[in-house]
Every structure is written in structure tokens, then in C-alpha cells.
Length: 115
Image (cartoon, rainbow, N blue to C red; front, side, top):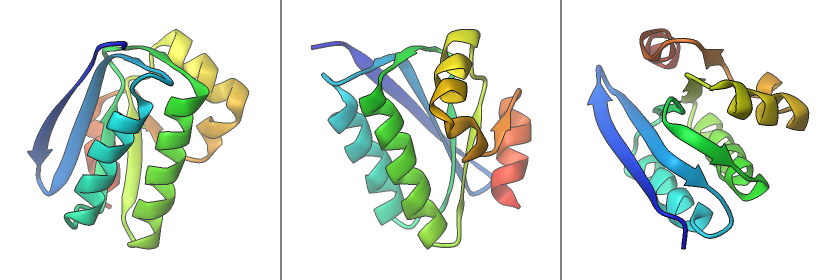
């Protein structure tokens, strides 16, 4: 199983979740559970910080899509930040880049998520 850790912090009512390592078919379900739990707990403003993400598979993209739909249904915002070149390419090729606000800095993403 591929190791994945997710660091979390809450800043001004926004949950910042930062996966470290890889999100792939081996661990996407665990990542999904973690993100969806936050939404179930009432957090509707979420930033996914991909600064330390090395790889994301289609299973990982699916998690981002599901989380985005659930957050949107609650009237919240899911913002992405710090997509490295490889991760950015995956989002670009998949068309996901146009589905979510993407920011260069964590601060900009938090500001966007706060509305």
C-alpha cells in the first residue's frame, strides 16, 4: 500500500488539507473518507494544498471531484493550491483545472474559500 499522510489545520474557518506523497488507487478511498468526514462534520470551506503531493491518479481525481460536488451542494467552496508542474498537468489534461479555483499560494486559496 502506498503511504499517504494528510496534514490538516483550520485557518479562519477554512480547513486546509495537505496530502503528502501519492494519491492513487491504493489509498484514494482513505483520502476520500478523510475529506468527506470534514464535509459531514459541517466544514464547507476546504482548501486542498498539493504542495507536497508527488502523484495523483484518476482515483485521486475522483476524490477531488466528489468532494467538490458535496461542498458545492452545501453552498461552500473547495479551492486548490500549490499544484506542482506534474499535478497541474494532470488537472489540465483531465479538464479538472476549470472545475475548481486554483491558486499559487495557500493564503490566496484560503481567501477564496472564505468568499
